[in-house]
Image (cartoon, rainbow, N blue to C red; front, side, top):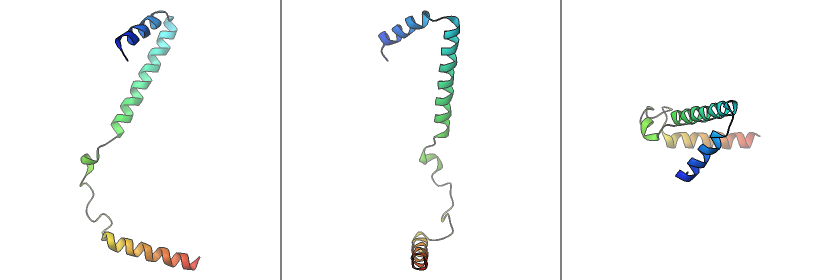
Amino acid sequence: MGKRDFEEVKRQIDKLSQLEKLKLLDYLAGMCRLGAQKRSHRRKWSEIRGTAPYPLTLEDAQDWISRTRAESDANRHLG
């Protein structure tokens, strides 16, 4: 938003009644709270990298892939 746009918004706000200004203030405060909540829930992968023990499931990745494929094949033949 440019300075001219901001000044225009301010002029329009000046024309509002006290009740309308309070409603606008409540709306803006809600938007700020929502924005803060969204930012606080987002984490960078670099912050959590390495926090899970390896191997996470106590099973080698290739062994897990082979086992789940075999289970899937077995279920497909049964169904």
